[in-house]
Figure 1 (cartoon, helix red, strand yellow):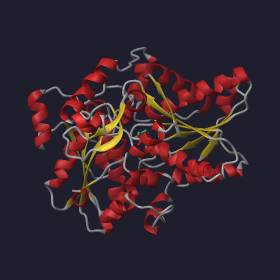
Figure 2: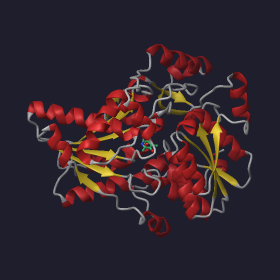
Figure 3: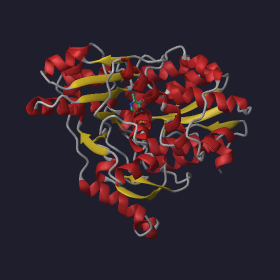
Figure 4: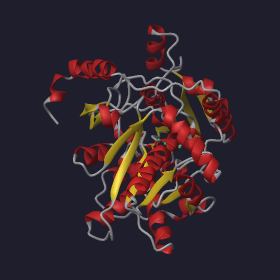
Length: 418
Ligand SMILES: *Cc1c(COP(=O)(O)O)cnc(C)c1O
């Protein structure tokens, strides 16, 4: 199954025990278009908050598609090209991943077929146009192109889609096409590893400023951008090289709180249950989150490695709702000028809270967070915020219980075998 979906090199990376894997020159050539990405000291925000804390952010929005996702998309397209793959199928939520893979595919001459969560397809038409400009084919999911999509539409013609459904469709489309492999933009070990270029650069950039973070903060959908930033610092910590007692904070949405309110169980990564079970924090594979604006945070599961670290207390988890998140983003825009994507705006909220706490206690903490994408395609969300139409949303416990009890009914052993 894995061999049918992924090129051999990525499977080897997925299970590799190597500490470091070299980045091939062909991938570096594409990275040079936007890497190294800038590290900023948020002096404007520090001043606006009157905080003694020092705030740094690493900005991945300078990549051509506008987020951290090309770091893995370019690598995945390259390894697939090397093994003669002609087409990649994938899913996308807000359109960030789809546009990143379309970008990667364009450099290595691979066709890209994207299943885009229907609500985003409708709310974010310009992300679709960007994917098409990079040469990709884009379909709203659930679609009539797959058995999974057809079945879901037969039961519920107005289904707005979810990442879980779109993954099932992309996997099915891959399995039906000999020339194709499948590509996933987060969650997998190899994807998280590709993203660690972020943290490695960040460490060197902070060294130039003769600084080191006390706390590293990032938003989490599947966990790849946050892992990419904090894992090199985590390595410092566990090998005794960190000069400080550094802490790590993951921030999710209260509308899709897999780590803070889900359970640590075996579950499928997709709604159609094509993908094998993995142990992770989950809200249940058939959970469909409400249509909040941070599309990239609407995934029911979480990277297994991050889930384990959260279970063991190595990382801390917070959740914020979209109204407080957009308020924080608006403060950030006024102070720093850059418009954050709705996903990293969750990290901005956590950073502002911590900086304000430092103002109370007088702590001169160094905070580092990841601004993993810009929000230039998210003006509808900002418009809703400005016109007061944004609603706070916290997922009710009952809905989590409902979706997880379905998982436990399907596999009664999941509750015992952890
Ligand atoms: C995809 C995406 C996310 C969520 O995915 P992670 O794997 O958790 O990083 C967050 N922010 C942006 C800008 C994204 O494109």
